[in-house]
Image (cartoon, rainbow, N blue to C red; front, side, top):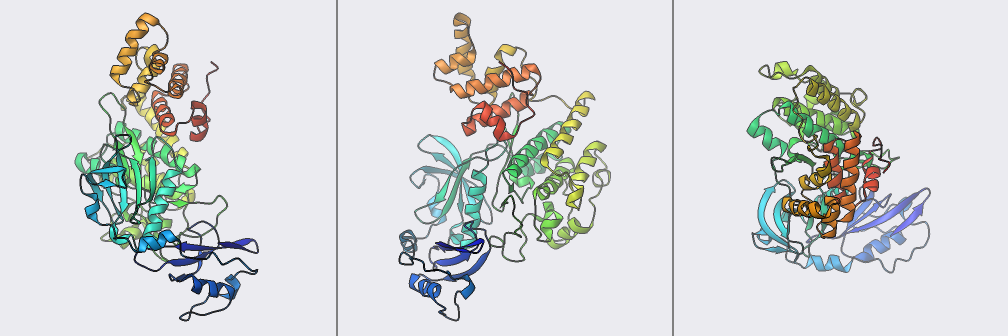
Amino acid sequence: MSWPFGNEKRVLFIVPSMGQETSWILRTEEEFDAPALWRYATNDPEIIHTMLVGEVQVEGTSIPEELRPTKELDLSALKVPAQATELLDLTPPSADDFLPGMVFEERYEIVSLIGSGGMGAVYKARQISVDRFVALKVLHPDLVADPISKRRFEHEAKAASTLMHPNLIVVHDFGFSKKGQPFIVMDYLEGPTLHDFIEENGPLDLNHLIRVFIQCCRALSHAHRKNVIHRDIKPCNIVLSLGDSTDPEFVKVLDFGIAKVLDKDSTRKFDQNLTNTGNIVGSPFFMSPEQCCGLPVDARSDIYSLGCVLYAAATACAPFIGEDHLRTMYKHLYEMAPPFAVMRPDLTIPAELERIVFKAIQKDPVDRYQSADELEEDLERLKMVLKKAGDIIATGDVPPAEPAKLAADLLLRTKIVTAEQVQEASKLQVGLGGEITAILVAQGKLEYGLAHAANKCRALILEGNLSFEHGLQMVQYCQETKLTFEEAIKELGWDWIELPTT
């Protein structure tokens, strides 16, 4: 229910809560993270009705006159939703609902527990209808009755579902179970987190490091163009999705639980409804100075955090480590990170990489890279310099020896088709001629749109207008989003590509 108030709006939210009274929240906008002007908890809509139409106090509380409707509204339909009433009578969810072999919401068969954090647990599950593995994330049962936790969980799903990029986690489904438990269904990723990789192997070598962080930059660039600020970039939220020995590594950035979705013209302060007044969100080892102070953040805050992660990947040490969280945050605010030679005198790290990292972690946002694109450009330049010097081994961006098989190789390395399917199509090509991709389409093994995208990428690569690595990302993106090649170019913002004339 809403009504006008000058140039603003007054919106009454009804937020059911299992096991507790329904929350009635008055906000200035239809967004759930808009500032809350007034709230009250009751399962009796008559109480809210009387407070809206007149200055009636209940237990010392009333809706202030300046917040009530200025004209008569139809309040006859004002009631607690039936679904909420039903939820109050249901047996609360429990961890026993997610034992191996159990079926969640008649759609997802639980396979195993992947991990558990402060807000939720993530399970490997099999999506029964299409027989594929997915990651099922659910809010902890004891937090289901907490409206803030539920809203934050829902926020993660909505923020992540607006983003479609090869280096971002894909959300396939989200909602509430019959027991009122929020859930998100995402890609199931095989491969370690960056944190686990560093813990086991130490610092990343130059080749690996640059490939990983170029992809991280592309992921953040896409999110920032969609006005989504991640706010919790850390090694645990970067997954190294591994393929076989012939496949490049695809980095995936995940966990948008505390992401901030910015309005283009918004000057609103910190998201108080999801982070109680004065609370700080993020991971202390990788938080920007403005996050540490609870100040408004923009894309440059994510760049600072990514710079801290880049420092950790190069040295296997966080740039700022205090005796506790408060002292660590103090260091972010007032101290400079130790130079690489001081932190790790046993390593030889290029001076240019150190310059890039320290520009990203400047205290003042004005002194940092102003976009993820700028940071990516410097990493790309460093990659080219090191490649010429022989310090970088070309991996994932070298096309195969036979240009005629380039499109098929793009499809093969992104696992859209199998080696057996390509081999069978190649045999037919010998007798019939034509393109391998056309034969795969005729056999029903490949969608026409993906064949078109692979052929377009092949032409661009052969003309020198696209790297093989970018071609792999484009083909995978077209598969995940179902966009055409031309639509994907616009969506990704790859306006630097010179499209082939044929």
